[in-house]
Image (cartoon, rainbow, N blue to C red; front, side, top):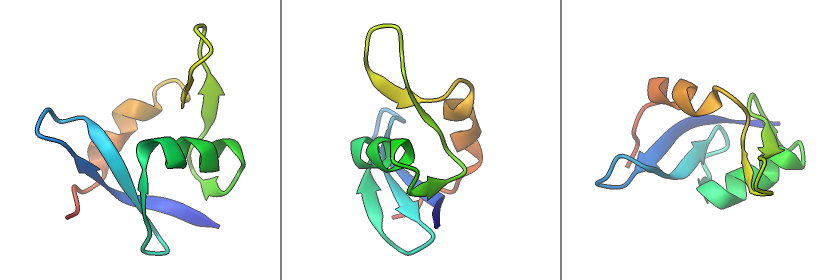
Length: 70
């Protein structure tokens, strides 16, 4: 099972894509769908109160430790 090893941010500092341990670059949305399906280890997706798919509580802050890869 793949894990997230890095990410890409836009010039506003927002995460736009992730780099997986398999070398794939996947969009934020695709990462959410794969996490929900159990295809990414170490992250969890959940539905928020407005019905939007998001990463679980507190996980957004943990992405600060991931390298910004290009």
